[in-house]
Length: 136
Ligand code: NI
Image (cartoon, rainbow, N blue to C red; front, side, top):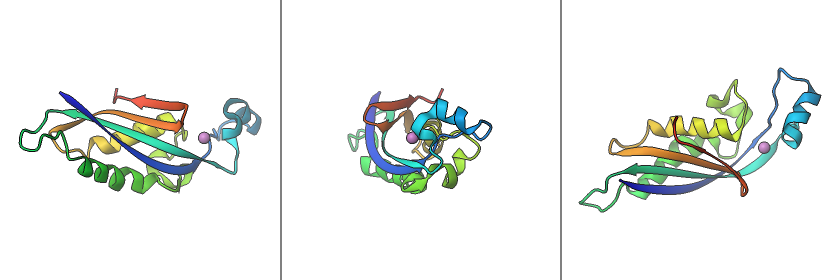
C-alpha cells in the first residue's frame, strides 16, 4: 500500500454564525469569525489517496489526473466563493473547517478511479489550524 498526497489551494469568504443564537452569543463563541460582513481565508487542501502501484506506470495515480479531479469537483465550487451563500453542501450547516473537510471528502470519494482509495482530507484554515478527516 502506498500513500500519495496532492496539495491544492483556494480562498473563500465565510462567517461562523448560528442563526438560532443572539448576536452576543455568536460573538462570545465565534469571536471575529462571527462578523456579519464576512471574512476570508486562504485554505490549503491536502488530499491523500492510497492503493497499489501500477507496474506499467510506477504510479498509484497520475498526479495530474488527481489534481484535475480536485480542481473540477472541489475548487470549482469553493474557490473565490462565499461558502455560506454559494456552496450547496454547506447549506443549513455551520460553515466550519470541519464541515468543509467532510463535504470535500464526500465529493472526492465518488470521483476517484476504482484502484485508488481516499485516505485523508486535511484542510488548513490558517498556517496554524487544520482539520483532518478520514471518512469515519
Ligand atoms: Ni473564519
